[in-house]
Image (cartoon, rainbow, N blue to C red):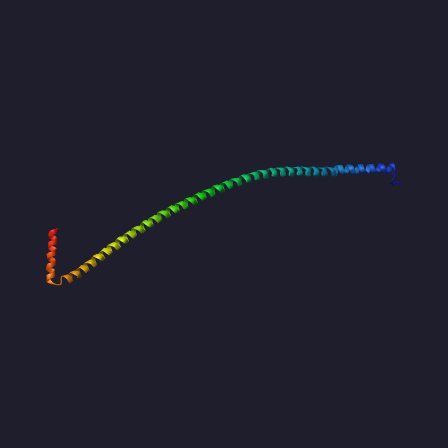
Length: 164
């Protein structure tokens, strides 16, 4: 029962030992513990501030990224527009050159056809003339085989010359 109802001496020595332990803890343990707690609190505050700063920087970077992305899209659209215009211009130039080349080739072909036609006509005329001369020569040989026929032809030709 002594433990349930402690005596005054026991209470006194418990208070003295508790005070000594409290003094020792205050002198040697609480200052470092409180210092570490303060240090930890400061580091947490610093980490929170750093996190908030990082959050702000992330927002700023995100807005910069969005702006840069928007500018890149705009620039891409401009480049695509320029490329389309250049492509259309090149196609138009190629069509123009092809049309001119086609017209030139067509004109050249027409000239060649005309030249060939004229050469064929000239050749045909020459052949007709040669054939006509050959036929006339054969006819004349057969008609003028006798002297009498020759005299009659000369007389007819002389009459025609006088009439003209």
